[in-house]
Image (cartoon, rainbow, N blue to C red; front, side):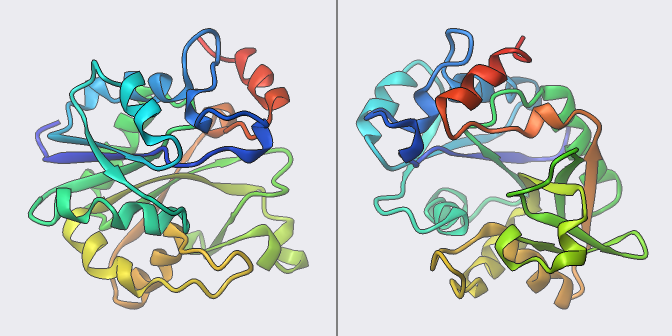
Length: 242
């Protein structure tokens, strides 16, 4: 890819439901940590900057990734995904290009999917592009709400009405943005929600209101965007991991 790219990998969480003292992204899927699965799929994108957001047991994660050519951003207290991305502002405040935001606990994502997301974003001159998938059971996920097939918003499970709960296209939690537009608008996100957290998807209505072009790239394999919050879910991911 000729366009300048930076990548942010969100990896600050504890993963409370794992009932473990190690950071969530260090749990193993087929003898490889979830975050190393994710990082291995970024190589072919050849990013100019690769930043991992760390928080809980930060030094342990730094040690685990000591052989990688990456920068770290520290999220000392976890106040949501947008709050995590804001911690990268110093790393990216002068970067002119696009920024891909990944989760460190989605180990089945493939470089092919990331490249196709990136290509769509560039080819269609988008300002933000969301990765989505259709799933059999969308419960618990943010729903992709469309209007005449055009993206309208992402509605979280707890905020969805009965009609929206029937939508089976979900937010994959992976996004690519024009970097300057991302950081010029991210501080407008508020935390008026049940968790009092700053959610990155909440930037999308802000961008749409300002007439920026927001697209959705839907993929066929829902397993690529599955995360793991429990050991049972980790074992389930092992059935699909390469």
